[in-house]
Amino acid sequence: MKNIFIYTNKSEASESCARDLAEKLKAENFTVQSEFSDSTEFVCVVGGDGTLMHAMRDCGYPATPFVGINTGHLGFYQEFHPQDLDELVGIIISGDYNVQSHRLLTADVKLAGGDVRSYQALTDVVFRGSMSKVTHLRLAIGDSFIENFSGDGIIVASSAGSTAYNYSLGGSIVDPRVSLLQITPIAPMNNKTFRSFTSSLLVPPGLDVHIYPEAGFTKSGYLIVDGEEYFFEDVEDVAIDLSEQTVNIVRLAGYDFWAKVKSKFL
Ligand code: NAP
Ligand code: MN
Image 1 (cartoon, rainbow, N blue to C red):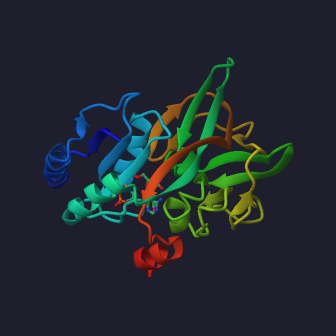
Image 2: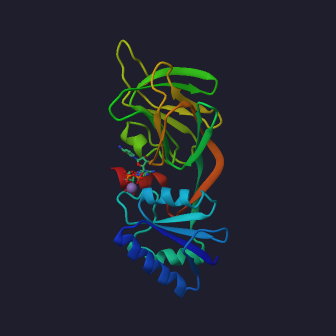
Image 3: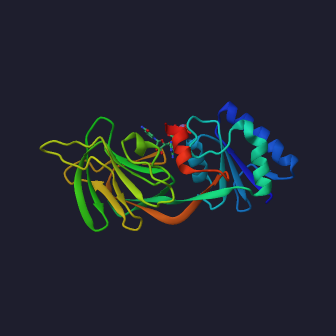
C-alpha cells in the first residue's frame, strides 16, 4: 500500500494531528494525498463520528478502508487517539487490522412531477416537518400500509447508526453483524385522535420502507441524511432501504462491538 488520503475537520486539534500523521507517513515512504482519488488505498479521518460520516460522503462511499482518529466527542467509529499515531502507522504497515463492513442506507425522495433525488447514508435517515408543527406521515413497509403517524417525524437507522440519534429516541442498540433497518418514531402522538407505534420496528433489508406526507396536510418536509439537511416542497414518497454497497471501517485486532458499547455508554 502506498497512497493514503488524510481527511480532517477544521478544528485546530484535528489539523495539528493530521500534520503529525502526514509527517510520520511520509517518513515511512507513503504518499500522502490531499484529495481522494481512484488511486487512494487507505483513508485516515481525523475528527469525531460526524467527521467520519462526512468523509465517507465526500469520497463517494468507496470500498477503501477508513480509519478514525478521534478528536471529536464520542468517537464510536474511531479506533485511535491523537497520541496513538505511531501505533496507527504500525498497523498500516503490518496490515494487522480488521475491517468492519456496513451496508449503506439509501433514500429516494420522489417529488410531485416525478423527479427522484437519491441519497446514501451510513447512520440514519430522518423525515420530519418543521420544528414547530406536528407532522402527519404515512408509513408503509414493503407492500403493507402500516399507519398514519403524527408527531415530529420518523428516523430509519442502520445497525451502524443504532447508537446515534436512534438510541437517544429510545431505539435499540444493534450489533452491526446484523443488517437491518430500525424505524423509530420521533415524539409520536398517542391520544383518541392520533395513534402510532411508540416502539421501534425492525425490518430486514430488501422490503423498502416508505414514508410520505398524509393527504390533506403539508407535503413539505426535511430529509436529514447522516445529519445533512435537505428541504423539499412537494414530497410524494420517501423510499428507504439498505443497499448491497458497503463501506469499511478499520478495527483493531482486539475490537469487540459490545466492549465498545460498554466503554462509550455505561
Ligand atoms: P452533531 O450534532 O455534531 O453530533 C451528533 C452526535 O452524535 C456526536 O456526539 C456524534 O459523535 C454522535 N454520533 C454520530 N454517529 C454516531 C454513532 N454511530 N454512534 C454513536 N454516536 C454517534 O452532528 P453530526 O456530527 O453531523 O452527526 C450527525 C448525527 O447526529 C446524525 O446522524 C444523528 O444520528 C445524530 N443526532 C443525534 C441527535 C440526538 O441524539 N438527540 C439529534 C440529532 C442528530 P462525535 O462526537 O464523535 O462526532
Ligand atoms: Mn459532529
